[in-house]
Length: 309
Image 1: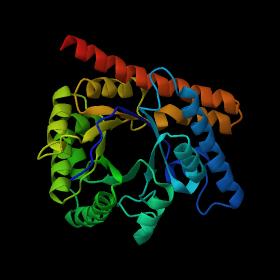
Image 2: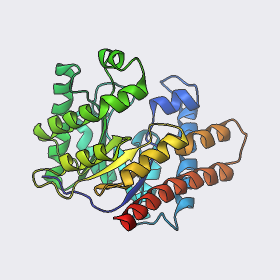
Image 3: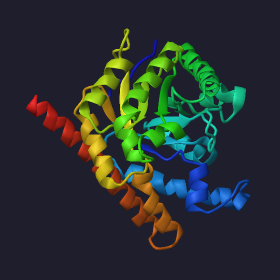
Image 4: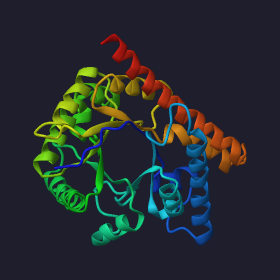
């Protein structure tokens, strides 16, 4: 069984690699040494923003960061020395199928950085390719078993992308799919992964529009003696209004312990920095401001619901 994690967790994720390099830098892999240094340096700007944001709603007890080893190794080492909550991505970036970035050596890389959480991202649609789902579940089970064996906390980011048939049934509309089909499919996916003996301490999931769907998710992830398991809601690079709505809805449900909002927090600021439209200090300040905003949104909704209960 998982260790669980019941503390608030306000995560700033910037472990993006493929989309980060192609979207912000317009570069193709493989990168040159100088290009790699530039990408790593830009992630230091986000880390500056994280540190600048600490205080008020964001403390050492609830703030955390998620970053990759490829461009963020120095950040991971410094964050651990500084006592911050850290999460390390283990998946190969840019792949629709979950595979370990370092293959069978995944455990050695986790042990090198000793993060608070080993994180995996999986795209898993229970009505999708059964063979693909089985392969992914097998790899996730390896990671889950390793984490349980050594006492390493495990975070699973679960995305449930629509199949072509599901999108067509939703009127070829992502919002229609999100509202009408994804909540049910999300529950089916969680149940299938639990039944495959995959035991995250935290489920990192896409935002849900209805409180009752959040309640169903919490009931499922905590079934069968999993009372300490928590959920956090991700931002999916949505606009501010949508992200804030997802955070408010999740915060009203006990068991949703926080959020992980990345690109909506840092993308514009880093883009302007790379285009020399703003200074490094100004970009970091903008990132900090948005990170604090999500914390205020979540805290405000949680306290409002607690007061009304």
